[in-house]
Structures are given as structure tokens and as C-alpha cells.
Image 1 (cartoon, one colour):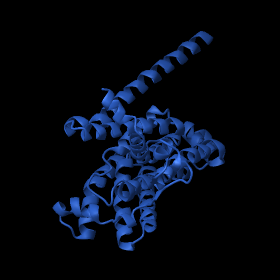
Image 2 (cartoon, rainbow, N blue to C red):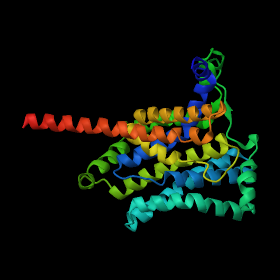
Image 3 (cartoon, helix red, strand yellow):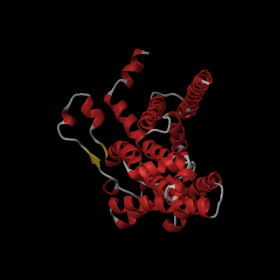
Image 4 (tube, rainbow, N blue to C red):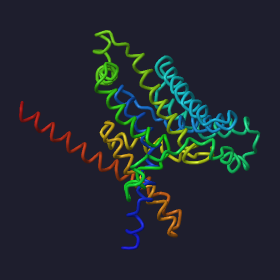
Amino acid sequence: MSNFLSMLLTPEFFWSIIRISAPIIFATLAAIVVEKAGFANIGLEGLMMFAALSGSLVSYYAKSWFWGLLAALLTGVLMSLLMGFFAFKLKTDIILVGIAINMMGSGGTLFLCKVITNLTQGKSMASTTGLITKALCIPDINIPLISSIPFIGKVISGHNLLTYLAFLFCLLTSILLYKTPLGLNIRAVGENPNAASSVGVSVLNIKYIAIGFSGLMSGFGGAFMSMAYAQGWSLDMVAGRGFIALAAQAMGGGECLGGMLSSLVFGFAQALGIKFSAIGLDSNLASPIPYAVTIIGLVIFAIVRNNRIKKQHSAAALNN
């Protein structure tokens, strides 16, 4: 047991937690903003898959990670706005639209990859991942001074650019929601769209902005997966992170700080699963660890929320 703890209490393990948590944080922020606007976007998984594919392919053909990142962001935004068009304009159920995007994110990306790269299905799983070299990946950043600090420097420094942006966007998104007129409008539409409309707020425009923001964050998450976490795209490489983000949003109470901390918990669970696999545990036992933690976390969140609601009802009854 002591040997296993010594393997966990290393800067490399904590570094891996932060790295693994980054795409979950992006998707969690996407889920938080649309939840504040009064609806849910369960298509985050599919959006991240499309963004990951477009980012890796454009980076390869343009020979520039910058254009690949831009392509991933545009893909996420445009596809999310398309979701909004079907949901808000054509009145399609937003949940069904999200399910469709997730299904397309698996089979549709494989089809596009085969059409664009002309690789067979068997080769695409290996060769497409290798399309991007290290030079075409989004760069890592070593922070001066901090990198020389014992233990902490090895944990904080040396991460990918998008990893630092993920934590920065937690702060910026919180400021957006609570310190700007746009954030006030988003929260007003989510709480009472009729009241917001009565004071001149365009409910439809705010919902488009919210879902567009979720697409932008999904684009960052997808780009991270194919241009930082791995060198290229592979089938289902997002591996449920979009759904885990929905759980992180719920566990975090729909707030940026809570969502970030919940994402770190899931990052810890995934890093733990990888560590278990590295020491010889059967992968069939190690791989479900993050999803088991997701279920446990949601159960705990539901219990806490129900207890809170009961206390509020009890307090209201006493006041009456």
C-alpha cells in the first residue's frame, strides 16, 4: 500500500491529473453556460469529435497548428449554431438534436475521415492518428521561474497551451456570467424567459449566443484531444468526456469553480485508472474507474441536492 501511495504522490501523477482534466473543463464550461440559459446541450461529445477531426486534418494539410486550432473552433461554433437552428427555429427537441450530433460524431467523423484521407477503416485507426507530427501539435509551455520550483514546478509547468487556457476560461466565464450585461441576460433568460423578453431582451439571440459559446468550448476540447493529447484523430477518441462534463456541471452546482473542481475529480479518476493499468491491473478493471466515479459523484450530488431542497421546504413551511 505504501509503495502504491508513493507512486501516486509524485509530480508526474499530479501533472497528469491537470492534463487529463483540461478537455473536461472546456466541455464543462460549455454545459454551464447553456444551463444558465435554460436548456441542455448533450451533444458535447459529438461536437468535440467533429472539432478534433477538423483540427487534426486542417493542421496536417495547412502545416500549421494555428489553422488547425482555428478550424476546430469554427467547426464547434458552426455545428452548435446548426443545433440551435434545428432546436430554436424548427422547434426540434434539443435533446434529440444532441443525440443526433453524438451519433454523427462517431460514424460521421469516420466517414469524413475516410473520404478526405482516402484511408480504409482498418488503416484509419492507426494511420490517421499519425498524420500530425509533434511540430504540428499545439505547443507546450514551460513557465519561467515556476518550472524551477521543486515538485510544484513539475506539476504546474510544461503543460500544453490549451491546458492553461482551460483554467483561464473558468475565470473569464465566471466574469462573463456575473459581471457583464450579457451574462445577466443569459441568466435572466434561463430563469424566466418571459420576464426577460418583457424588458427587451431577445430570448432567441441569447440562446444562440449560449449554444455558440458551448460550441466554442467544445472546439477547444476537441482540438486538445487531437492536437495535444494525441497526435491526430482516432475513432471515439473523446471517450465519453462530453458526458462526463455534463456530470461535472451537475456536481459543480452549475458554477464555474464547482465545475472546475469536479472536472479535476474526474481527471484524478482517469489518471488513477491509467496508473492502475501501468502497474499491471487488467485494463477491463481499470478503464471503468472514471465512469464509476461519475456515477458515484452524481449520486452524492443528488443526495446533497435533495437534502438542501428538503431544508428549504421545511424553512418555508415554518415561515408560513
